[in-house]
Length: 232
Image (cartoon, rainbow, N blue to C red):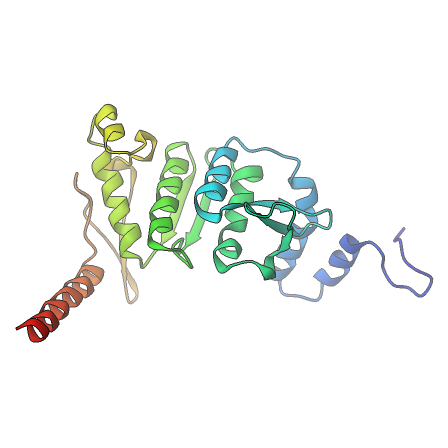
């Protein structure tokens, strides 16, 4: 029996979500059903919850929670009493809130997840951090397919590949967590060129993406020419 006012208005917000779900295409319906389930899912704790904590402390500088209505909320570290709805938060919070929820409540070893451009809305420092966190998740059993156009992400992946060849004590001396390391035979890289996917060779020092390297080389060459004109 649906809890409703005499005039027929539905009082239960979760029931309202269920009623509205049928009006939308399947992907949106799935999202609405997920919102309906969040209040229950938040009671679960994943073995990867520490990665959610790391994302919150290192990148978001605040905490993600779930309201009784199943909506995500964000509380900045400098104002824990503020429970901000997602549409009021910064783009980085919107982008990573679902990743935080996944790691805290849903993630399990042998999961397979797809992440499209994790660098979206992130400062270069934070791009390096999330690359390391994803590498740690992969080391602990989650299979990750990721697309990126970020030179920062690619270079950090190369660092983590090189890290796998260092003794743990040397890695720690350099400020790296050995759990970030990715062995060359544990990662696959593909370059999508128009309608084809070309495998990219991976060595002990990492890999090279020519289409991105060419742009970086042109930027450096232009910079040198401009310096020469200004200072020459």
